[in-house]
Image (cartoon, rainbow, N blue to C red; front, side, top):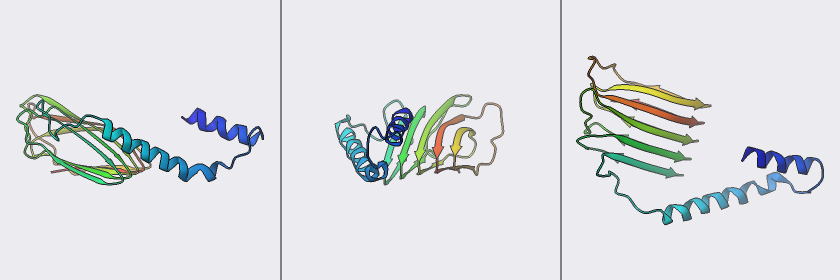
Length: 162
């Protein structure tokens, strides 16, 4: 995508084409937003919590709140563009010594993850012009359930708390 945009700007600069790229900004934003909505309706619907203990959320210019009370929580995907997702795992369980994961992506948006006390949380999130805030009390014990949070936050935020 960067190569395509860079090539377009280079052709404009070399005067092979004569288009003001800033005049195309809002039409491109509207096309991307409309395409996203169309693709979202074509996707098969899933229940908020799957039978295998996973939770998936996507927010585009809005907010999504999900919670899980899975007996064996395993995985979650949180994706937000100009919006936010909140995931409440305080009623979910991970067996002692086991590991679960949460994959996050935020573009000019944010995520909030609520975890129960006693879980060991490993945050491996890359933040570009954004932030990751971990408000957790460290878990004690070698066999504490472990939650690994990984992903990318661009001009947004991630909060992890009890």
